[in-house]
Length: 444
Image (cartoon, rainbow, N blue to C red):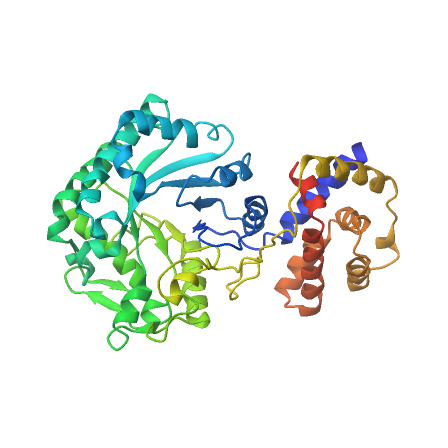
């Protein structure tokens, strides 16, 4: 058993050495308007391999919350617009929390509930009037359950709630929405919860491609713009949009409320009139965005407040209505392959697992550990790696574990741009994830 534990520890170290190639400092929107998405248990492995630890849902899917139990992933869950009227009733709000939050909160990290999505830019004024009471009632119900310090309540807004956003210092909310927004800002101030905005430079570029620089929208090198009121320089549109929201909030008397981006992204495909919706532009936008987030910087107007963003979206969703772009915001296809390369290498297991498979895997691993042979001492360097890659067996997995220096070899190959070694190591990575039971054993 001591040998088993030692091997498992080495395998875990090895897995972290090059499966999670880069840490991702952003959250991800996990939408499910599709009929071909992988099971949540498989998605949990994908996100783990990507090192993504913040996920935003549009509902409170019990299958998802259960699949991510005992992980480090923090969740934003959603109450759809159809619930707003009911959530104004304290009894129904309490019942919803008892059903959708209380059973999971001990094992799954639920940190936020969004009440409604883009309500104020819809055409239903009655729904708008339900929004704040629903937020207040849900927050009160959380307090009754002793969860108001652990879970905050907010709502996500479309960038369309702004009447003006350029230059950023003159940002202002629409006058017809001022009454609603002022009350919501007061709620945020009282509960210390963030103001969420869905901000898409793509929409601005699509509507005005002759006036807006594509490079500026994509975080590419460009002259950018200078806000003549503040002399602040902006080298990308998203950060200018965020600061415009801060200015609009300030104009309503609040400077203490943090703005978070609940959605941003760029489609890889669109209708003929959706200018700029291409795989290359989507790759540039999201890839450059991740690089900026890694720098842990704020916006020009809020340099000490790191930008907090949820990328839209994890998968392409084939059943979403609307233009073609709506079905093509995903970073990944439903089979787990990337839509384009932005440096994220994640792995989607080919099958789901069960407790019985875990037990079988443990038994197999014990037998395998007793029969480990010392191929590493007969082969060296790429010859050993090729041997393991060709064997495609569970024994090979533990041979990898026995030779922990492989993690170092990966880093050295990456630094030295040794493409042959990197290719072999990538194949090894694929083998590991082909053998889902081996990964289950790691995660036990």
